[in-house]
Image (cartoon, rainbow, N blue to C red):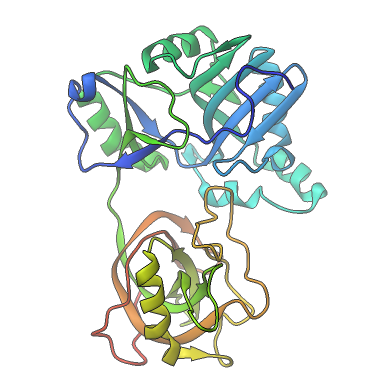
Length: 347
């Protein structure tokens, strides 16, 4: 592979704002739907295709259908930024998308047939021999329009310069499983790894049970540190189901949490011992690359369901294997000190 922009490339990110910003802010904005999938930078050089996740991990083996679609739809030499999504019944389905990340090649091949994925493209980093990352967003959009990506498996995202239209999208598209709105300054060059764009996300909260944690990668016996909190909800049978994790803590707060939670740690009689997924032990969420991995033996600490995390922010709601619904949490809430031992949260 020999392209003007070579992997690894960190995708340009967005910082959260409240409310859809004015169209003339930041020198002029263009609005796009915020797709709820796996961020992906796709590199194509002839028959060579690399699908790179937000963290730079290859996604090719999990999405052979997208690799084939890229070869079919994209120019012979290019680098594009987009989102891999799976739709079911006219709405995005993050749970089905996550199921595509599986170690067995036979299952990957079957799922590619049963639940085909699509690549939604919203930026072009390189085309032919030209590096476009230093060009303004408006020109990169012109280049994207010139590619004529109209599906079915590779297509360009919708966009508008009209704030009222963007506000309507924000209100209506949630029913289709989209995650909000992204606003991009029209003069913005591509800034890998920087939060140069703006995002408006739907506010969602739920009361959840804090029932375990994973230690941070730098945690030691002398200085224990919490990497991520593991939370759950009870299903209709009263079983505590894992629904997500939170890992956005300062180093000082990680140490404080380790001390606060130490008295609650148990080694038996807990439904999650041997158990749920979560965030990685360095505190980084695995959600961008697929479902969280289970901790290594001895690296997860389960606790009594002794505290409630009120008003926990979460990213998405996904159907559960149980008769109820689970919540895929991804927040920074901390335990409520007012909750007594043995407290539980109701779904």
